[in-house]
Length: 97
Image 1: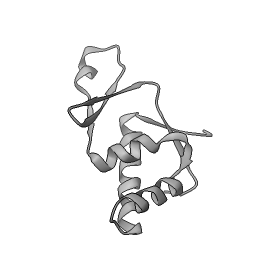
Image 2: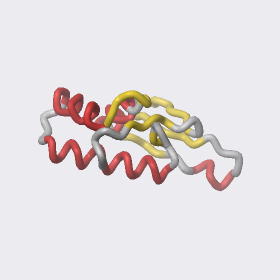
Image 3: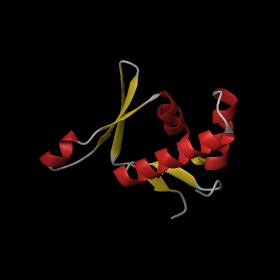
Image 4: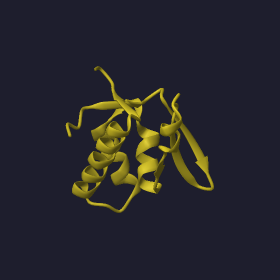
């Protein structure tokens, strides 16, 4: 994924922290969609909190490298994988689209 891209959380997602886990819940109107939630692990929650419509993917990468003992390649893969998953889940919107 291009490092200069910026993403923001969708207004259709509500975030809750329960017992140390960050849970994403879609705001839906149909009952079948009510069981669609997404639980973030520690690293994913760290990335999620930086997806504020201002931080680019490169800036998020640098913050990960400052915080975690991880290679740049592994951190980039983790970010890209999470962004793709969250886009498919409908939890993110690209800024500037």
